[in-house]
Length: 98
Image (cartoon, rainbow, N blue to C red):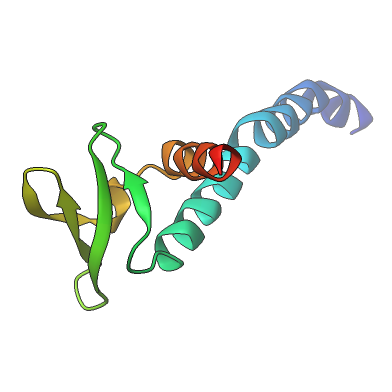
């Protein structure tokens, strides 16, 4: 009986390591991105994951989209297409310049 438990210990330890170093950080990041998308408001300057710089004009709660204003016009994007990291970097550098 104890031999079976000892032989399963390495597999259990590997699962714990994988969980804490890969799965848990991904879950935390996903929650942060959802919170960021939910906290977007009109006038926020954002960068999409494809690199488009824009300002939020309208937010649509029904379909989770937003209208972004760029130098070439207005575009409709899904909120999930907005990059949390790049947008935060953009906004923190703007604050530092002031």
